Length: 104
Length: 174
Figure 1 (cartoon, each protein chain N blue to C red):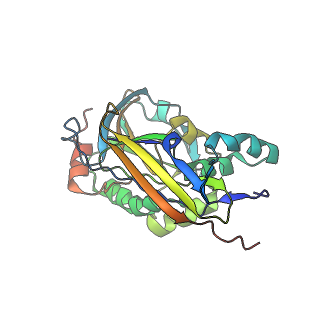
Figure 2: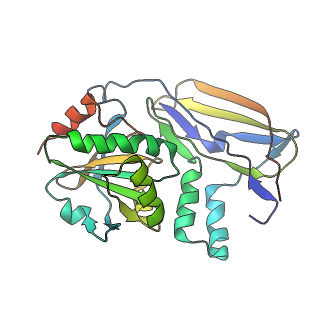
């Protein structure tokens, strides 16, 4: 078993920490913008869960939202393993991620 | 988003664990025992206006509750297998309740016509029924027993038309 805990992921841009948008950040914005419930629901399903206990052979995907920046983004992701979370820790690093250009 | 905050592309993060557990070894791959108690209320209508209530219409039989959406890639792959599963099941002990999550009728109709034309789906038009079930992701499948208790959960999209899965469904106790 492998544990996804987004609280254990760190993002930086140009060497400076950046903070991702938590899924709970969206609800008040949507209410202010009168976004239909169906659209809110679909958007939530595109997000990577905050926490998930990945089971054997399980695959789940999703998006994470960061403040837009032109600087190269790095991600340090950490996962604990084992049903009791006492297994080995898996650490991954991704560098040189970039925001897509905004065509508008 | 009007502010200077946008999606960082689509950072699709697929995570894949390879461990195995003894508890689920007798089940088809990707199906696990999931005794979550009574199933949440599910009362929706399909595209023809026909209603289905899990708590009423589902009583006394197993119900295969499957949440899906047309934008979900694994759903597109899995839906034809579900149609073949329905065609190949020899008994009627399992009722299939497809639940589309938060899409409109035209989208649902176009999708099913293309990938599984013999299937019909309930419409969770505002997505709130799906929210109540809190699936791990889409697609999501639960097997609810004749007493209305969730007994099994599928992890992601599965080849339901294959012999292991059909045998599993056929041997569910009455």
